Image (cartoon, rainbow, N blue to C red):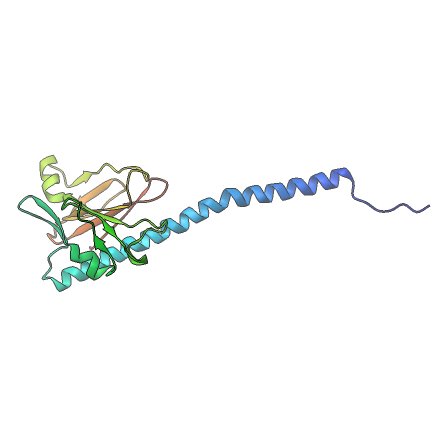
Length: 190
């Protein structure tokens, strides 16, 4: 009588355990990889917005698309529609310091499909003068509270996370965007 070769129960359990570990590693690593890819796209978008604002300055005698004018915070609506995404339509219910848009194409849209918002925060020179410092700490909201808002600070450059430094140039600005996970990405025109 000839014995047939077969797997032992230990071999089967070992193979199943290894397969289970591989699946577990994939399901743990995949969301982190996807989040990293979305954040990379957001950082690229932020750099593109800074480039668009710099192009706006070049075409408008160094005037910023976001600035203070007699204590009124202003964001030029044409900045987004002419320099970033011509399909966007500004929402009419926004204050002058927080511009929202609708019907945008893919150019002004977060990787999760939400349309970006622009918010003028403050002139760092004025805020730093009040605090008698060369940089100001900014309080950053969480990812959930950020509402996909690009925060703009004028007379500023990027410092460490949560810090915006005073710039000597009156036409300088820094843009900050909160990434998934709560960290912030900053880009400036210096």
